[in-house]
Amino acid sequence: MHDHRTLRNAALLVAAAIFAVSCAMATRQALATGASSPPSGKVVLKIGWTEEPDNLNPFVGYMTSAYEVWSLQYDYLFNPRPDGTHGAELAAERPTTANGGISDGGRVWTVHIRPGVKWQDGQPLTADDVAFTYNYIVQNRMLNWTMVAAGITKAIAVDPTTVKLICSAPKADMLDATIPIVPKHIWQQVKPDAAQSWYQNKPPIIGSGPFQVVRVKKGSYVKLERNPLYWGKTPTVDEIVFETYQNADTMTQDLKMGTIDAAQGLLPAQFTALRGDKRFGTVAYNFLNWNYIAFNCSQGPSKGNPVLRDPAFRRALVCAIDQNLLVASAYGGLAEPGTTVITPHTWSNPDYHWEPPADARLTFDLGKAKQMLDAAGYKDSNGDGIREDHKGKPISLRLWALADDEPVQAEGKLITGWWKQLDIGVTLAVLERGALDSHFWNYEGNTYVPDYDCYIDATLGFLDPGETLPWFTTAQIGNWNEACWSNAEFDKLCAEQAGTMDRTKRAQLTWRAQELMYENAVYPILTYPKNLQAYNTERWTGWTPLKLAGSAAGPVFYSSCNIDTYLNLRPAKPSHAGDGTTRLVVTVIVAAAVALAIVVTWLVIRGRRRRRQTLDEA
Image 1 (cartoon, rainbow, N blue to C red):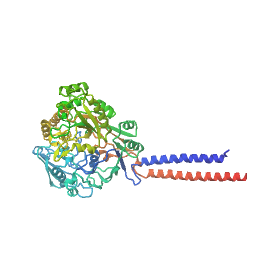
Image 2 (image 1 turned 45 degrees about the horizontal axis):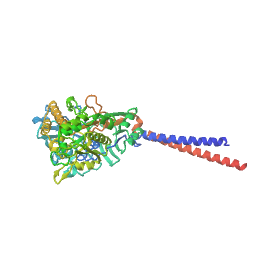
Image 3 (image 1 turned 60 degrees about the vertical axis):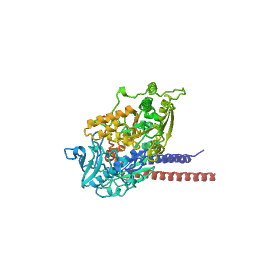
Image 4 (image 1 turned 135 degrees about the horizontal axis):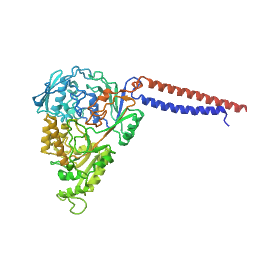
């Protein structure tokens, strides 16, 4: 039978174990609470994403994450927003006809830039840098910015704070053209061929924005530090760390634990759960992005199935797609059916989005789709269950989905099933991005020969709709034109809208261009997916959403045209600013745990000695 001392010692041992566990939990929580502010006193913002930048060279990178970093690293001459306002920009004032900034009917733009702006290495930023950036793009046809700089023939630095942009025709989108201004003294040493192919600018990267990229670890993080030379508002945040996650579940758990402060790219189930957590703000938004099928409509050399050249055949395929089911099944309801490449709920005064009227909408109806194919001459003449083309060959389509996009793959499975019900042979395959690109940009010698039938993908357009529509002009076949489609009226509309300074008339031209694409079913927009993000409102204040048309909720970060959140954020609690409280609490808890463990150990050893002594005496 145990005596009271043994029981006491056992109780102390249990208490020590409980206390140790409590200490460990408290330590973890304390560390999480102070995760955004290390002991050095720096205020650190940590954001998780599942899509890291492909390249931080602004002439090569194309991922949304790259654009987000560029918006912090560089300044734009103009920084427009879809509601007609603008953010921080290098232009000291926006040029107008009244102030003499716009002349020759919109062919000459005289822009005065802010004086005293410096690059992050301390050198002055002048109009010469602005002129260099535009000329570097125009003269070397830099792919990333050809649509944005279209129509500009040259840029001239008049004096250190004045630059003239000369255009071949009136340029209606000049104020909506977002081009990162790069330092001439660095980029003039980079050959243009290298700049738009293999070149990677290594940290610390020199720009003039509020933050500077100082370190990048592929597959892990991108780290930026506050720029002390920034001409604009001084941020409270000292460092921004974009953490890369391979798994959205892990990212969500880290957000809940406080390891990161915000997350972009959540899955629907995770997002839904976080919406009920009072510690976080959440937003499901669409901003310029869509999910689509690219049909190979090429009338030239092509390895695509010739039936896809026929608009009647393509329209029938579109009528065999249930967009509502795609929204519900592939996106958990966090999307809406798509129509055109100019997204809804984005622009105002005017709204550039065109919506097809009810009598022109291609709605889901398998019976109607079969009738459309019959009427177009695509029938199953031999009764084998597969329709033939006009030459009597069984129709078989290759449908591809991207390996890194689960919703796209889910859509591919559904669409394959529907098209097979039309008595069309369909083979669904999942391809890596590189493999798909090699089929799209397939050349035989110097001849472009696209080698695909149709594939499902997702992308996003430019902030100015007139820069997105020209993707599908004849001149862009083999480049931006994924449908390889050519239409003379469409080409004319795109050219005309680019030089139409009246915004209302310009909107009307873009509406007709969208209508043509829809009627011809060249690039069917399946859905407008919602981007899902969550952010900690318990520990941070100043999250600033981007204003979209009407009451549409915009992102608080990750929009590449709105950096207000990064400039406005500040810790919600004093201890969050890194005053060392967290470290002190953790230190005291650990020290107390160690002290208690020593005391308990001494008591247990002492109790055992006394018991042994008692037994010996007995």
